[in-house]
Length: 637
Image (tube, rainbow, N blue to C red; front, side, top):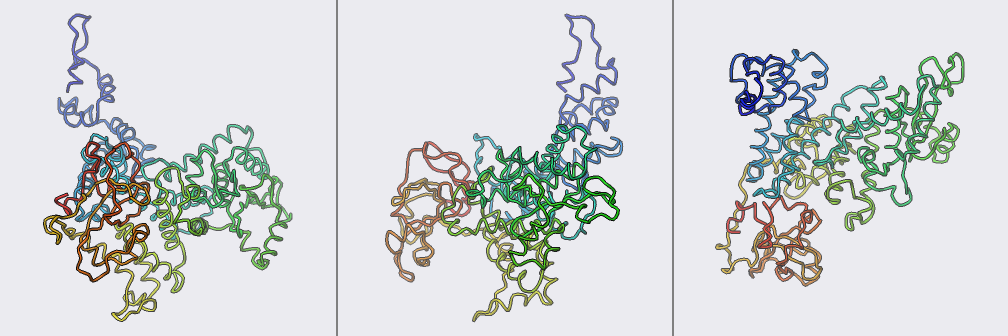
């Protein structure tokens, strides 16, 4: 209402119109500068006239377009924008979205506050899809003055990751159910989205989702079109050769240093390739970029799954040759050509491809390797490329930044997320059978529940039905793989265990109930330097019982180097501490003798502990320790 009062007459100046005298057009224009919230809570309640003006469909269409960036696909938001304003209940849509924002914020608060039903909270928000993304991005930028800013940033990022994963898996699921497209633009859209889905697993709170990838490709096509007048009059061959040379001249395809960088993880991701200034990409991604831009220019280009090096196939329009002549009885080779957007400016002769296939022993499979393949096959091949990059010997131990560093995020955590993405793609897009697919599923079910427990509902939604398709008796599906004296072990139980634990309060550890009456000497959140190896860590839990249940394999190598732990079965009491290490995502278990607490807060930087928000609310510089967010487990810390 304050906005309206400011419009009254200035007594010292010339006579001005009162609100009642103002025409509808002027008031309607002013309403665009009033927030939707003020409109709902005050302006529309002034009078019947104001109610009518404050509820104009065009006004609320404007608010939906400018105040909200992300919409779930089921809204068909772009089509709504293109239609007449009266066709959509824009005000209702805005109010509905505001309600979702409040629901997401409340659910996120609960996720931060307690472990109980945390997985259910993730599922609730994930099912909302992109309708939850705007408000989650706001929480990702929580100010450092907030009481729980580290936890809020961490969990809002994790929830956004969950939303993105759901979108990616749904994209692959839809692709697996869809017939192969013949329409140029639809075929290109399938390819860029199938490959772009991998980026969603490591996108976090950054731009670069599927719609952003499409816009970047649109911009490239527009730039090419503007710089090449008369494009439509060119032959298909001229268009294709000009495009591939233009892309390569601008480093939009290929690698700057293939000898050293070929297996870099980012080269497998089309979104990373488009966003990174160097635009490095593997042959499969370079071919996909070329084909996607070509489709926007009216060129029929497809990827072919040539061994070790994906190429692009360009086909002439029906009834014509690549040079624009009528096809007639001409040689079929005049109606298609091959390009290597990754490594060559020139046309690749079919005879050259035949020669390579003969050398590889695939001469009988020439047709298979030189025909267009669907987007699903390309996504499967990207998944294998990711696995190959992550399968470099000892890579996980040394985590070479050159191999695993992406545009944003922690390298180790991104590597795990990419491996997770590759596993999902292979399970969703590969044809299920009783051997390879089941083996792959079993490894997936055993490896990831502790890493991504919040995704149990995705496993149930997408993988359980496929599993049931493969076998006649789900109960006995893995019996042939696992037999122990206690009976068969079903890998599904790992994920079901995550579901069951989600509703159970965590165990409580009290200092005054330790066998050692003095209790642990260190507290949750304390920052320390490892005495032997010098790395910084932060304590996330302590356990007196670890002394009686740990084996040599449970301790970190640096603690084993200092001598053996207390032997299992002994009654001696000792404290061990779980901790997170600077720049790493994996937890460590360290004995008290290796912990040297620090008191200099300047040693702790904001990005030093990527998983700190899982355990802590914020960093207290005065005490040089993190403030615990796991008080329900450790109430006295």
